[in-house]
Length: 320
Image (tube, rainbow, N blue to C red; front, side, top):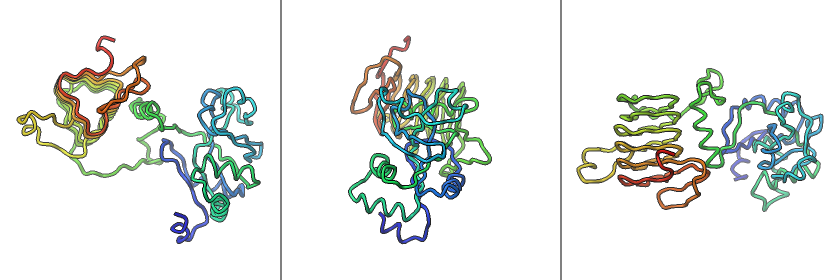
């Protein structure tokens, strides 16, 4: 990919992570990089000792220069990896600086690092440690805004449901830090007699459910009569279907059928869930790997395009 990049005239290269949710002003990031005369700047975020074992941890001096780096340190060596942080962080027991996987390189430095490490394909595990240990000017950009890793099922699930909070930490309703979505030009959503509380509902949906609570409902979702959706993320559909023809042929249409109950679940795109179906995740539910669904950390994930037949019960009993 470097020959392609080299065809453009530029001074800096910013590398961003694809499995994180955050709101960062990249202009400030670039300004900081230039003002500190860094060759490489790494965005870092303060974390607690419990969180630190899951990240790459930076040892940073008073000037903000990164001196050492360790990938996912064990608890028994954590005391060696504290950095001098402001009281607003230490009061929350945050004494460690974790890499956010967001990097800003001077062009010539990136080219130099890649030439010196021709077989390395991972920035976090290879390129970055090499730069720190070989005398490059690697600085820490301290970030104190919203950031969460969504690289696991649990973190992805929690980050999405957090958007339904009255005032979410990640704010979709902001005039300055605007989050742009893909314009699909769909019809407005139609809701028939549904009690909705803490519900985030995308466009183009047809909802007859009895209740939607603390859930995210994706585009073109169809939810049948008397159904209940609680603490779940339903991703929606890529297309609409002619329901009457499908039902006449005895086939299950995309969406959620009548009299079904879904809780603590992620329903992927274009899933077909029949009538009288129960899908209930929760703590203590054993991990499972199946063709139509799997269970991870108590969360039931129905796979993309899967069909869940009428009267199927997955997970915990309704009274538990």
